[in-house]
Every structure is written in C-alpha cells, then in structure tokens.
Image (cartoon, rainbow, N blue to C red; front, side, top):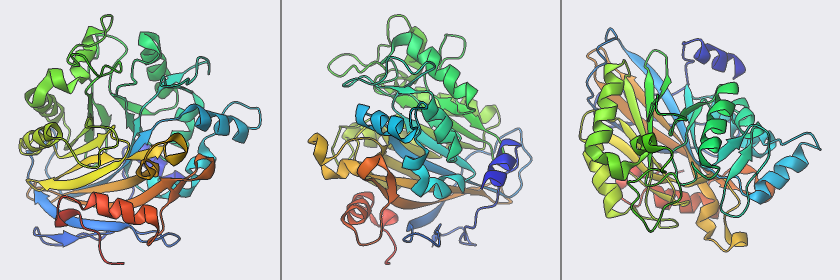
Amino acid sequence: MRGARALLRSGTFAVLAVVLGACSGTASTSIRSATTAPTSTVSTSTATSAPSPRHTVKPATVTVAVTGDVLPHASVLRDAAADANGHGYQFRSMLAPVASVISSADVAICQLETTLSQTDTGLTTANSFVSPHELARDLVAVGFDGCSSANNHSFDAGLAGVISTRKVARLHHLRLAGPAASATTPGRPALYPGLLEVAQLSYSYSVDNAIEQDTSRPPANAPWMRANLYPARQPSGIIADARRARASGADVVIVSMHWGNMFDPMPTAEQRRYAKALLTSGQVDAIIGAHPHVIQPCQQIDGRYVLYSVGNFLSAQGPAAGLPQASEDGVIATLTFRRDARGRLHQSLSYLPTYVGPGHVVHRAAAGTASYRRTVQAMSAMGAQCRADAM
C-alpha cells in the first residue's frame, strides 16, 4: 500500500474496498482481509453535520482507522532493541501482522501514550514513559498518519519532553493532536487533507499524571496545555474547538478522549455525559476513547459513534504484569464517512480484534479465540448497534 500512502500525502485518497448501504437507513459494511479472520462488523447509520463552508458539496468518502494505546513499557523497548541487532530500536516486526489493515485506511491514527526522545536517552523507567525516536519512524512505516498525544503521560519528561516529541513527530511526518510545545499553538488539531478533510482534537483528564488533584490545572510552566484538559474545557469548550475546525474547512471532526477508569470494562457517568453532549452537538462526528487499557463498548448516539475505550495496541500489560487478561486486547476500528450529494454525512464502523502476544507482537485475534470473544462481548455490551455479525 505504499503507493496508496503516497497518494494520500499528495492530497488524493486511495479507494478502500468497502461496500456501503445505498440508502440512508441502516445497512452494514465490512472490511476484510483474505489472510485473516473476518472483521467484526457493526451497523451503518446516518448523521447530519454542517457542511464545511470552504468546500463545494459533492459525494466523497474517507476511511479512518484508529487503534488503542501505544504504551511501550521497558520490556517492549528491550525487545525492540534486540530486534534492531545493536542498531537502535526496531518496532516494525511487532506491528507487521496488522500493518496491512492500518495502511489500507485513508487516515490511520494511534493513541501515543509516551513522549519521544530525539537522542534515545532517559527512556522508560517504571511509570514514566519515554520512547526512542524510532517508534515514530516505525509507526509511520506501518501506515500510521498521526496520533493523539494528550494523556496523563504527556509531561513525563517535562516541557523538554513535549518539545522533543513534537520535533521527532515532525521529522518523521507523524501528525500529533495534543499538547503543543509553546503557547503559540495551544490545543491545535491535527488535520488530514483530502476529498474529505479530517480534523482530530485531543483531550485528557490530565497531562502530568495528576490523579488525586484538580486535573483542570495544567503544569505551572505550560499554562497553554489547559486547552487539552477536558475538565477545564468542558463539553462547551470542546464543541467550540470542533466548530472552529469546521469553520477552517474540516468536513469530519474526530475527538480523542483520554478518560475513564483503568481496567474498568464499562464507561463512567462522566464519559457518557461528555459523549452525549459532544455527539448531539452537530459539531463532533466521532469520539475515540483511551486510558482504561481494556476495551469498553462502542455506542451510537444521534447516529454517531463513540468508542469509549479501544484498549491497548502495543504494551506489556496482561497477567504477567499482574493485570487483567483483557489488557492484552485491542481493536483496529475503521470508521467510514461518506458524504452524499445533499451534503449529509453517513458513517459506519467495523473493527478487527487484536492482542499483544509473546515478544510484544500485535496479532489479529482469530475468530473463536478467547481474545476475540472478549473483544466482541466488550464492544457490544451497550447495545445491538455494535453487535458483531455471526461468523
């Protein structure tokens, strides 16, 4: 898919083999690979968002693939160093089994729960996450276009770490939605141009691992990061950010939220409150959740999708670390947005269950396996709109 990715970067989206329902009612779609177990599929719904004032309204489609937390623990980094045979770090082999799914989407977004070091120094220890610059290189190599970077580990290396993360991401052409390195561009969205322009906004309950304190306060030396704290922004502030993104030309607005309780399989009342407010505003088209480190349900609200938590993508969590088996699970969820000739935006969602196996390799979970069953049950726990097709 390297040719398709080159087309994407030139502003022309590749065509994904997706069959959409032809009418505006409920239909279904699936994205399948001939070499893998079928992708679980959920229903299509219609939602109407205000057309971008900058574009002439004409039919167009964009697919956006999203994954869970990229959280490279120290053991992940050790394996990456071993795979590189003494030449830095190499993560591609860990991600290779799912690379074709990621690269087939027009836009692919991860949840980057680590800072990035330009010099590969001061790397992850205990609960402070700093990853080598090769991580950004290899995320792009397997097809990622950008990541959410607002989370409770954004400030693990202080302001210098935020600056380094932005520099590394820019060097490797990895877009970031999250805390900026200075007050000149606070809370800016990541923009993905194409026939339908996608804007991604990113918020967290904290950027400096605050848990038992007022999380609406940013780090003292980075007050502009308040723009990425949802307790400070509140739903009204996020909606205003989304409205500004649309006014600037975005056709689709996706919000990444770092929220909820760790290892809790169900969303909190706060998560549900924000989801309802954002998705009924007409300004936000979808919400991608992270932080619980297990999969939480997906749900349709006003015809739009919220994935309360897409679990872990790459990490060292699981029973070996004294954590739930479900923390090894994740999904690659693909949102398809189709604008019709009347300017209405239709969306559908499909997902591929994944799990982290030995050597921290991310695998596709085969139908019938324990990981696959856990994922399908978790994704459909809040209603039939996220029920998987019978396989």
